[in-house]
Length: 334
Image (tube, rainbow, N blue to C red):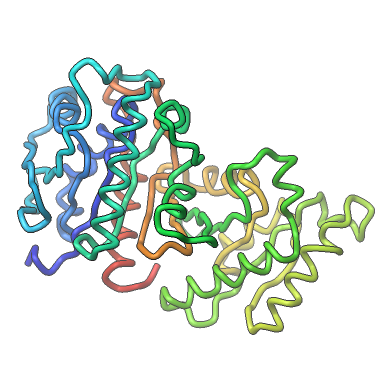
């Protein structure tokens, strides 16, 4: 039966962060093996030390190809890239070798998925500071994967229970993000989100667009973006048979989505979308990439260097990311 389940590539993330710990904890859950065949792309010495730290009854099974994946509870299948030397990993500290290694896991796992050898990609957290020290200029997973796959339009969607939030912008300063609240970008994002939801089996999705200004601008008294950019983008999307509504005040629209009024909310900048998702259900919130030529989900948290190596990291977000990746790869639905 295992051979019928999708192989899901899971990157180890930054070896000095909590990535190795949450992977070991997640793959100690027999339920994960009921839905997929997980394959970790990472580095063996780090995972061995993590297993010892957590004192879990699991062992590593190093493989050279996906054909060797056992997918048995109690065994973690690992494609070991052997790309970290003893002493290079200092748990809880930012360093270039860990940043370089983390990006190499992403490259290999993405390659396997693009070639169809694995069905989806799940990513553990990386440190943007460490990857920059290693020479990578991209600000995160999505930006790197977009460049790696040649994609020009992509987006991050966060999911926590019934709340789904797509982001117009993510890794920009607030000042820059406000400048990017433009009709053309909003329309493109609504089109991308609409097509993604249709691929996932939601034939007629309904989207809300959050306002930028308090009270949706109060008819222009508190800002004109709603009148000059956001509203016209929504109207044009409606002309393309996209059920987009708003702009709605950001202090109430997310609660309306939680109550089932909308399939997703388009947030206009990073914190406008991340805060409600993490308040609603931080432990199980997941990031899903839109627009990439592969299925990619991720934990919705960082490397947590402050708690790395203490054995207290929560693996629920990773477990949920694996479940969603398996479901999207098999059933093509959220």
